Image 1 (cartoon, rainbow, N blue to C red):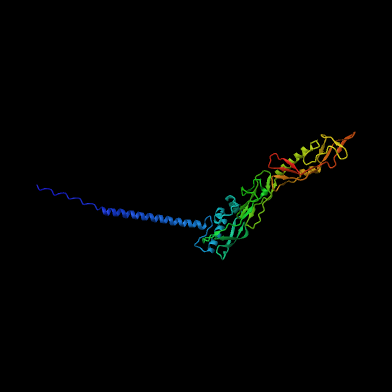
Image 2 (cartoon, helix red, strand yellow):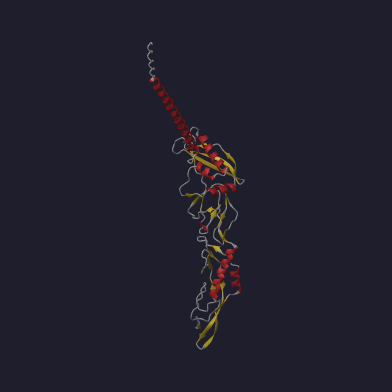
Length: 361
């Protein structure tokens, strides 16, 4: 038998090609990752630029000229007002002074909805030669009433990005409504006269939260621009409040009239123990009565809330009463009558106190 030929030796694998393939694949993967990262950074930078151009600081697009920036800023701001979006309007302008108090967005949105801004016309900007600020004349309507306003833009930090200055739209709080739970479009109304309240054009409804009180003007207040003369309403008593006031005064008067002592209260001067002509008045025998004209004064009395403390309500001077008492002079005894028998003073009622206490002046 002839011998079998030897088995062929298996060929060696080419590891160099495999290594090159792995390296090439890793390089392609690395390049792909770099491309993705680059795209993310690019779009992030574009997004950041967009936020800066029209974001909460009101910055303009530096790629545009000053006039174009100014026009765009004012146009975007007015578009926000037309859309009734108060938050967007405030974000598009520079922040107001720190001493100006903001109302909730709901109050501004309600104002813009009740008296819409429309018919906007943005004029050509007038830029300062120094290149740091400019004005943009604008006309629009608020609830159909035409308004003119000059917006200002500025680039005080010289970064070539203009900002829309905060419009000078603010009013001082009505301290004549302090302590009455005043609201403006269903939001709390700051009533400190030293507080400035940021405003937007629109309609504002004022209400009071203390029973017995109402605003003197029930129609909403329409605010159009910083030159508007916003007249806050005063506090008045409702019919129920006035009835409670008169009832409290009547009760106090009845209590004083029933006193049989020389001292009665209610602003009535204390009777002297002895008169100038020698009569001695007997304490505990005094009889007081209310004339018809004095009673009519109480029944129809008007009531005026104090300006500084509106829950403290003042009435009218009531007038004289009839007064008699037992008196003696030597051996003489009888009944003396006081000429113009003293006068009831002017009542004031603390309407914030459930007991409705009455004081007199």
